[in-house]
Length: 256
Length: 320
Image (cartoon, rainbow over all chains, first blue to last red; front, side, top):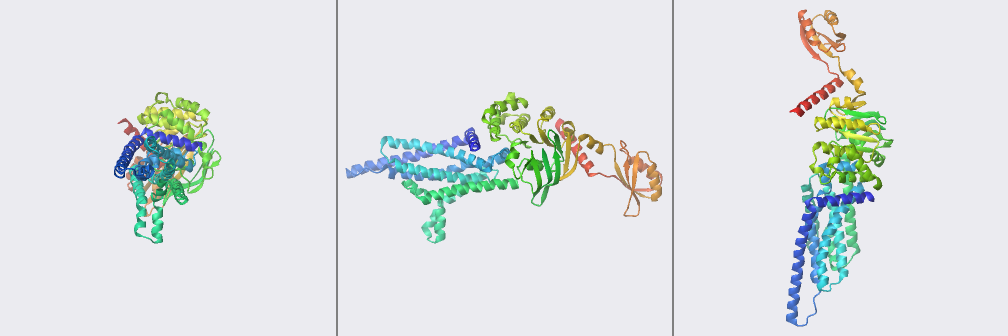
C-alpha cells in the first residue's frame, strides 16, 4: 500500500514538472468554461422568452437543461484529453530506461500499475474539480437538485477510471508516447461511437457491440440514475484494463 | 553470495547466455569481461530479476531469482548501463524516491540519502535537476541509487563507460572502497579495468563462459607465448629436426596435412613471442617450400586480443 502511494506521488509530481498537467488543466478549464457559459446563457435566454410569452410558465428545470447536457459533454471532452494523461505512464519509463529501476526494486507489478493509475486518477480528479467550481455558480444563482449531480459525478469518476485503465495498458505496449497517444485516442473514439450499431442493428451481436460502448453507459448517470449494470460495466472495464497492463508488464520481462 | 548454475537465456532462436555457472563469495569484486554483445548485460539482468532465465538456476544471498524475486531485489543494488534517472527530479529527491521504493524505512531515509551523497561525492549537485547534470555526475547518481538501501550485492553494468579518464579513476577507487561491505559484480569490455579492481574475472564470449580465474593467473596464462601453425613442402622428419633446434621452440606437434606436406604446430617458450620470422628464414634457407605460416589463436587469446584492441581503440578515441 505504501509503495503504491510512493509511486503515485512521484508520478503526480512528474505530471506537474512537465508542461502536460498545465496544458491539460488549462485546455480543460477553457473548453469546459465555454460549454458551461453557453449552456447557462442558452438556459437564461430560453427561460426569459418563456416567461415573456406565457406570462407565468412553470420555471424550467436547471438539472434537465444545464446539468445533464453538461455532464454528457464532459464525458466526451474527457475522451479527447485522456490520451494526454495516459500516454506517458509507461512509454516514458520504457524510453528513458527508468523502468529498469522500478522492475529491479522490490515492488510488485501490481503496485507499479496501481501507483501510476492512481496518479492519473488524481490529475483527472483535478479536472473534475475545475468543473465543480463552475457548477458552484448554479447553486449560488439557482436551486439545482444536488443528488442527480452527485450521481453524475460518480459516473464521471467511473468513466474516467475506465479510460485511464485502458490508456495505461496502451501506454505499456510501446516506448513511444505519440504512438501511445494516437492508439489510445483511436480506441477511445471507437468505444464512444460503438453504440451507433444499436440504431441500425437489432441482432444479438449488434446488442453486444452496442453494450460495449463506453459513453452509452454514462447516460443513466447523467440523468441521476445509478443502474447496477452500468456500474458493473465500468468496474469490469477498469479491471480488464489493469489486468491487461499486468500481462503487458509480464511480457515485457520475457521480451525485454 | 551469488550462485549461477547452468544459467541460460534465449531470445527466440538466439542464445544470449549459454549454460553459465559460477559462484561469488561474500565481499569479492568480480569482473565480467567480454566483448560487446557477449551476454554480460543479459546475465546481470537475470541476476537482478529483470529477466527470467530460460534455463538453469541463479540465487543471490540465498534467494532464488525466480522463486523469491522480491527478496533478491531487496539484497541487490543495480546500476544498469544507462543510469535509470528521472530528469525532472532533483538529485536528493531522486535518491529519496529510490530509497523508498527499495524499502528504506521512513526514519532512515534522510540519513541514507546524506550518506550516499557523501559517499558518491554528490554534495555539490544535491539540489540540482538531474537533467542538468554531466555524464559523470549522472553515473554517480546512478551508483548512489544502487547503494541507497545498503544492499549486500552490487551489480554494476559498465560503470565506467562514457566517463573521462579522471572520472574513471575515481569510480574505480569508489568501487574498491565499497568492497568488503558489499559483494560486487561489474561488467566491462576493458581489460585493465578488471586487473585494477577485481579479485576474480569471469570471461564470457558469445554467451559462453570462457574462463574464471584471478587476474594474475589469467595474465600468466595469456601472455608470453605463442602457438604457430606451419606447412612446409619438404621431408617431414628433416623439417621437424630443424625446427626443434630453433631457439625459443618449446614443443612441436605433427599435424596431418591434407596435401601430404609436412604440417606442424609449434608452441614457443615463455616470453619468446616472435618466432615466425625465424621459422620462415629456416625453411627458406633449407631450400624447402613454405606453404603456410600463421599464428593459432586459442579462444581465450582471441578474446584477450579483442578486449585489448577495443581498449586501445577506446583510449585513442578518448584522446582525440
